[in-house]
Length: 259
Image 1 (cartoon, rainbow, N blue to C red):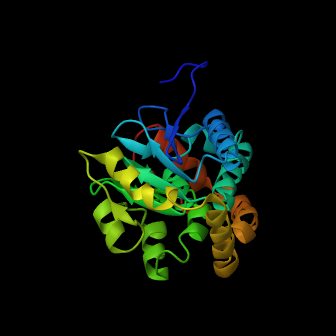
Image 2 (image 1 turned 120 degrees about the horizontal axis):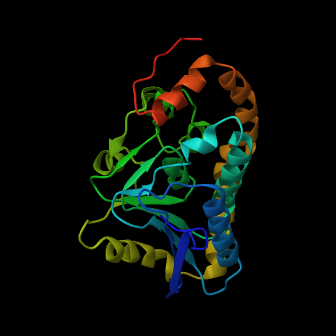
């Protein structure tokens, strides 16, 4: 894993495209420092006239992002972590240029939510995509909002309430993923997908995204904090909430008290 002085985010820029890699092996888990670095990279790109689109991906082949560190879900750090994560997702939702998540590996929990906050998703066929939080007795409140408009209500219910992941092929079939990219030529395929945006006029792209937000609305921007505030206290008061996190940390089945 990166040492304390090493960056958790890598970037490269060329031909109108900024590529951003999450670089926290082995599974690119998010924590406060990496979220701050990612926000800084996005903020810089937002004001860079040479950038017309952003591609967000992960290093390695195991995971795009396995979400937020489980240790950061505990009572001592959860409030700070949730606020930092919501701030990052909001920045992605409000970003003025096209942002595409490229799933080089699994996108689970907060990693799936990170991808959902982007405008589009491309994926390898075999990667796992999902929201397993309910298995830990936690709730993916951002996903509840970010999936709206992308998927039918019954599909959202299945993914949130069952917690089982789907693969990239199924995600493409149901419309969660825009395109499948190959294992062999992953970055080349991703860059080809991005060319349809990078060849456009930057100010026109900005206006187009403004128009899309106004036409479609943004449920996440309106409801993310309110939904979290309504659900989090009730969840945190449950014995099963503590048991879910403990069971995950101890790599054992949860013993639900149902209270």
